[in-house]
Image 1 (cartoon, rainbow, N blue to C red):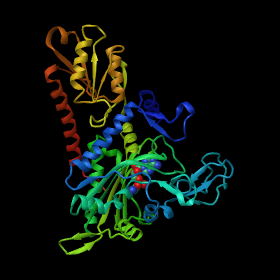
Image 2 (tube, rainbow, N blue to C red):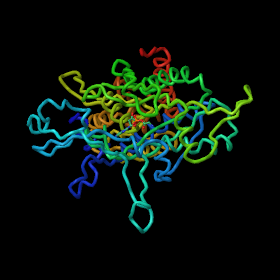
Image 3 (cartoon, rainbow, N blue to C red):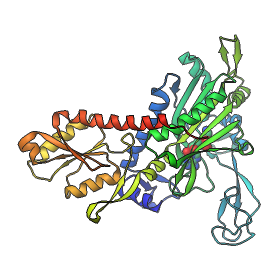
Image 4 (cartoon, protein in one colour):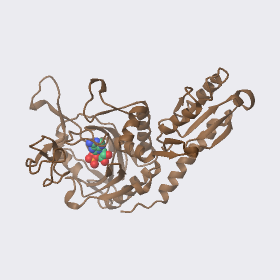
Length: 449
Ligand code: GAP
């Protein structure tokens, strides 16, 4: 993990938050490359969950909303983690993350833990000038509730029939007791959630479908399937709203950990909000001629954990010929922060104008970078290290002879000469081929439950 953290800082993927003020524990800012990669993750998710489908629509709800939402959802009373303190060193742990009979993981003291106490994880704030209990509001701990409270609005506005999904991407906040492991567990993070509403009875099939579909999505992004697995929650460990939950886990450097949870939430949320708001959150089923409360299946993923997973999965230190080595991120072109780098062979005044013209040609089509500093070999290595799938090199032949450039492939390091006029199409073809390849792999893959 340390290698990934240092690469992230050095190359501008992730910075410690507020570093010039000594930092802010367990908070991170995303740098230029991290920002691009996160946009790509969100776009890939949106494409797969909304644009690519005919049964899901989007939503953007507020981060701070009526506190009654969190009473109805159960978060005010049940969104608690059991917490213990070590009386010897004052370190704080989640009681369910450690063995309470074992020595303290921080100081080694035995038998020094306090009794577990419940700790509500919602972050509180106050609305308006008076800060008392009547002005308390919460930063949302999940985006999901936005979909439930807008269920009626969305269905009325879109005139959709079941099954219908409502999807949202946005920041959520939790006062985690034990944040850590870089961006894996933080207090501010970003979720990609979709609530898929079906007729009661159809939820078992929907739960199965979404578990497999979501697993395959990571394969579509190029993640090695052998580093992914399902973890079905035992009945006694289910969240208060869930009739069944399965996590997609990834083998991070810290071990197998959840990247996404798929939950069968039954009609719990709509019924709760109906009871608390006094509104009828039902659906008129033309087939049976009755008003029904739909059931809901929810795939809930994290942008930050997907980001970390993709970096861990892509990272490689390769030994090349003549004992040369390189660090390379084998990122899928769909998520790589830079798709194409334009590199003039040198800063020679003959080459740079043409290289800039090539750059102008590519910018409307791809995320690009222009780099003319240092030797071409070093520049290839720099692009390898940030996962750029293709480098386009402009050399003397380009300007003096053939008006063609070289496309260098990151993974194979093969080079191919292409006329400038065909360059966009040639790169597009490579991009589409990479997408088609992982799509085929995902479609052929049968995730094991
Ligand atoms: N609406 C259901 C829900 O929020 P969750 O399993 O608590 O379910 C879904 O969260 C996803 O959000 C997780 O799988 C993870 O990717 C991300 N997530 C949750 N808490 C996080 C945290 N403290 N830091 C980073 N990501 C987090």
